[in-house]
Image 1 (cartoon, one colour):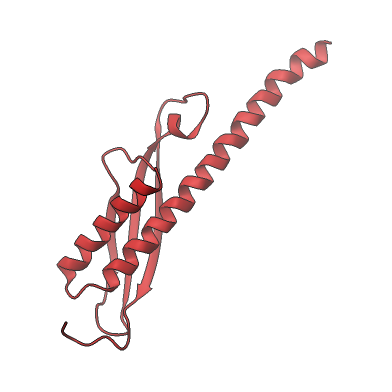
Image 2 (tube, one colour):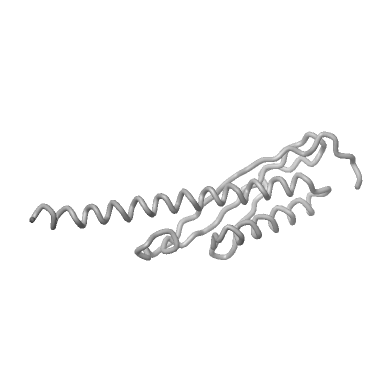
Length: 129
C-alpha cells in the first residue's frame, strides 16, 4: 500500500513528461512544415522583397491552419536567397510557444522553437513572367 502511495505521483509525473514531450514533437513537426512551405513560396518569387513577403505570409498562414499559436507571431528569417534558376532559398521560422499550450498542467513560461528549410529555384524558370 505504501509503495502505491509513493509510486503514484512518480508515475503521474512521468506521464505528464511524456505528454509534454510528445506535444513538443508535434509542434516541431508543424513548424518544419511551415518552414518548408515558406521556403517553397520564396523560391517561386521573382524578387527578394516578394520572396520575403511570400515566406512570411505562408509561414503565418500555415501555422494558423496547423493551430500553432506563436506569441507575437512567427519570426521568419531568410538565411540564403539566391533566386537565379537553380539557386537556393533557405528560410528559418521561429515561434515562441507558451509551455502551458504544450502541457496538460499549465506550466508557466515559454519556449522558442525553430525550424529551417531550403528549396531550390526551378532551373527552367524564365527570367521574366
